[in-house]
Figure 1 (tube, rainbow, N blue to C red):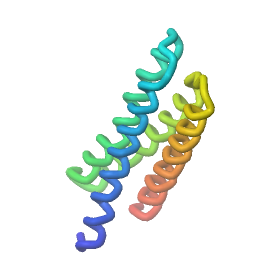
Figure 2: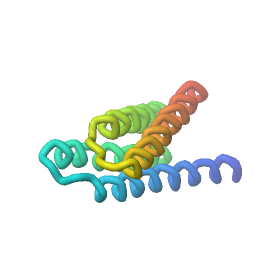
Figure 3: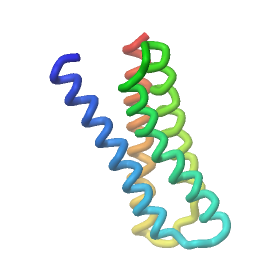
Length: 120
């Protein structure tokens, strides 16, 4: 890898970490009813899995392993978007935060999709 691609690699690691952190901050604001509690658990898991699988991809044992972890990162970003759409928000501020997180999940899905296309 060149220095530039290493920089991009770690930028995406940081970006996925920030996504997971922002999701956790968002979840702390939500009403604690039964459905939100269950949906939020799934959201927290999937948002963290995006970056965890990207890190695994960067330490992969080969191209097939790399591609599998990138696919999982993309899938987890898509799942995060689903849970974000499902949780109940009770204020305009929460709705704005959710919209930003949904947008970030879409961008992450697109990035991982581009990595897959360019790696095959």
